Length: 152
Image (tube, rainbow, N blue to C red; front, side, top):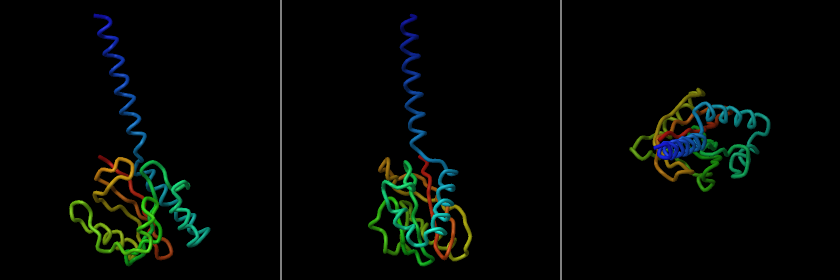
């Protein structure tokens, strides 16, 4: 009987460690907001040269499932930490997995020069699954600096 309880305790401990590790692999909304703000600080210091830093997969703006992407008011991508192939493309008509025109919302923040949150569903670069995501966008110099946090 005691051995069964020990096994149960060990299995419970392993499960708890696994769940904690998964939670640690996911960034929080506050971490996303903080990274967007840091991206604006770097942009103020380096101008458009900061875009290369945001695109650097080994750089300081890639953290677990967090990355910076930069859009202008027309939806053109100027930097994208998860997919550099999107740089130079317009995402103005892009919709999420549910058909939501979330880039239009992001563009609205840039046009209004107003920070904020936009919710949508997107592929998580870590899990490779479509998940709920909320992106915080800061605006500076006519550009939107966005970072999103995923939640399953």
